[in-house]
View 1: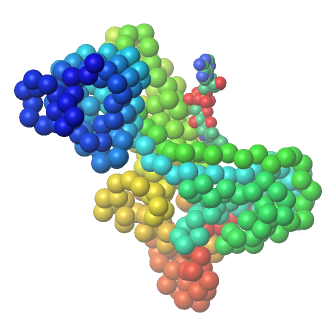
View 2: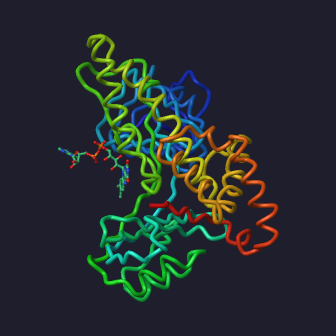
View 3: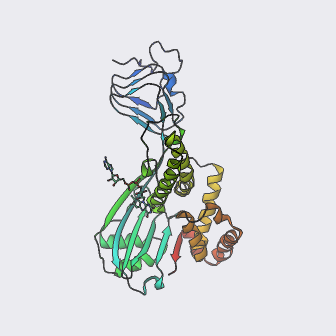
Length: 350
Ligand SMILES: Cc1cc2nc3c(=O)[nH]c(=O)nc-3n(C[C@H](O)[C@H](O)[C@H](O)COP(=O)(O)OP(=O)(O)OC[C@H]3O[C@@H](n4cnc5c(N)ncnc54)[C@H](O)[C@@H]3O)c2cc1C
């Protein structure tokens, strides 16, 4: 038996508002007051999904931000719980990988090429040196735009990238593995540092706190940083460990989260907050990608930031800014093709 009326008000509730329309609940839902949803800011259609026979008492709070989602399982009893939503930026990244025989002359002797997705062509690809005679090739796109696991169609997909080098290699090189496909639905961050209490002798770590679009190759680095931070926290004893650790981990996560999510938000179909700062940075990164097609220094500068070897501010160094301007105004005028594709092959020299 539920105490929620058909108009979504709660029987005898002192709070005048109904349960918000984007809260879905199963049979037998007992809710002491709809006030627990006063901090629900999410506009998502099913922002809170509550299972069957769930009881929520006053003092709980669903503090869920603009793009947050939250699921509460069947038979849960919530008493005084602060529910923090996951920050989720759905991207539907999908890519397909295969290993190929490498010849020393491939890519003019370079060790890698990364083609970042940029409008209007959001497909991306990477060919990376694995050993003297092996390349690993990954290509894919956003929103489920996956490269097929068929040799001809894989080569055709590679041919749709703004630069031909990956297609040229996969068309002729000897395959050394099967295709492997991978899908990654969303960047996901859980804000444990905002909880005012946490179970004793228990911690959350690595991807369980935050996982990023794997295209940016940051997760292991951040997890290793968290391990170092945990060691530092443990040196100061076990008291209040969770709060100290989550706060330290949040600081380590902030930059890679901004890099991964900021880049993904350049894609027009990716939903998420785009304040002015993010829009400016994304516009600038698009220009940097254009200029990087002919400027290895810019390509390396971007990859260093993406790989957390340099701070994002390094991309605003006057030398970098001047080369971005030069690459767009001067080279871009001479080479309209680069502006059209607006994508960056970052070639890493041996
Ligand atoms: C395709 C892909 C490519 C990536 N490329 C890179 C990259 O190039 N560079 C980079 O830095 N990061 C990369 N990452 C991210 C990186 O792999 C993760 O961020 C990192 O592994 C996170 O470490 P973790 O310990 O939190 O989780 P994991 O490495 O996933 O370890 C969790 C472990 O827990 C085990 N486990 C799960 N459930 C249970 C259970 N119930 N009981 C017992 N064990 C359980 C799992 O089997 C797993 O071994 C990539 C990720 C993916 C998916």
